[in-house]
Figure (spheres, one colour):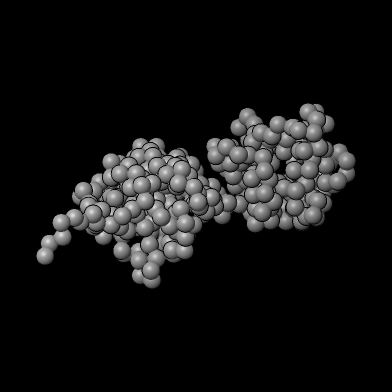
Length: 315
């Protein structure tokens, strides 16, 4: 006998409200409350409220293209608050829409078009070999990355790999502390690659002088020595909270083919104070060495033997 009344599954009104918002903003097939996909998403929302959502194992596709910083902490924070649960879900949906802009990640916008009501919390099964799933919701808890920042991060990573291992770690620590803007970080690492080139030319051309010079630097590290000199100089001029600029790390300021700026000042000060005595042994002044060509040793002049006229044989 067919029942006179079939109310179907009963969901918390907060859950139904959030699902209704999802259905408005995500592609869907108008699922009914009794459908498996509706029930599955309702369960995920309830897990956010109960604080059990993070018990799932997540495997993220395109992980480098999303900002997952402190996402778990943000999800934990919504436990026990329907308003916070609603806010985090709506915020993720808003960020998903923002990601469709050309200046936002991910690169592949078709991937975004494939996200639907059914795959918002739990992504494609191809990432689900061991009970793990790719949660699009988690990917968009934070605002999507700017495309410029992502490309810059890739370039910065390559520049770091090209930087001399002698000072790479110290340079990275300094950069993280003083340069917060992405374009400043990018410029800084380009300068570090130029430092690497300069030191390589120096070592190849004058290995003994180079060795003495490195030994004279604080902790045997030219970056540490320069950093100390720079900070002391800036604090003397500006006080305890100096303004740090990337151009302080440029080897030349005017593309003149010669050392200049703070780098030259550091070396000249070291020479004047007899700290970098080894540099006095160079054939030319240290500021004359910047380009690869400037490190080329000049050919030794062959002195012509002067012959006395009386010594010439007579035929």
